[in-house]
Amino acid sequence: MKSGSSHGFGQEPASIRARYKRPFDMAVIALSGVLLAPLWLFLCVAIPVAIRLEDGGRVFHAQTRLGRAGSHFEMFKFRTMVEEAEKSTGPVWAAENDSRVTRVGRILRPLHLDEIPQILNVLKGDMSLVGPRPERPELASLIERQQPGFGRRLRVRPGIAGLAQARRSHYASARQKHAYDNLYIEKMSPLLDLKLLAACFLISIGILPNPNSGGEGEP
Image (cartoon, rainbow, N blue to C red; front, side, top):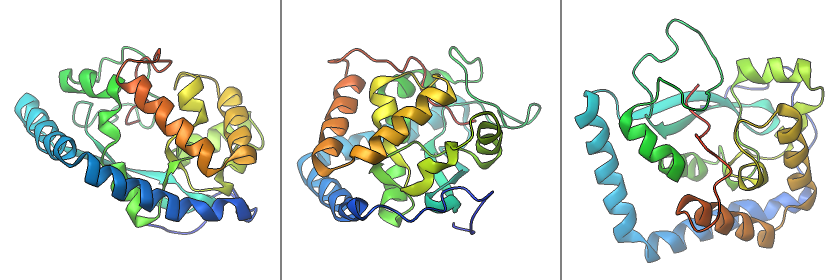
């Protein structure tokens, strides 16, 4: 659900080169849907059942994130943390070996299976398959104060996968993520997107070393 700009982030117009992204995303989703239909069906049934069996809580987790040009949208994930994980703390970054992560979550996170519902965000046009990971408005404001220019990553739609995720841990510094995000925006192309999608897939199934030890987390 979009609701306008935030804090003046991402005011620059999107690059003309980004126009390929929407048809590219739809083509990849359609092709993978045809080729991997049995796998998607299995995962979309097994994961919700496993989450419900563990603690009887909600299957999905929705959280407000920043989209292109600072618009707000609700990003979807399979829930991997205990219910009301931030009730006593407020918004905080996830940490490695986070005690709030459920047993099912500890399986889903390294494989990035908790991100599957974000396909809905891509179909809605809030996200792209590849791009900078969307940040929470509260945390983005803090990062912008510490790392001026961080909001420039909002020149394009945020993504499920990205250069920072393929090369660095989710727990890298804001400066490192900023550098990778801006490099991706400068170099983005259909070929680069295919390479990054392939790299993230190979990392998730263990063929390539996984730089992301714990996942981005719900907070």
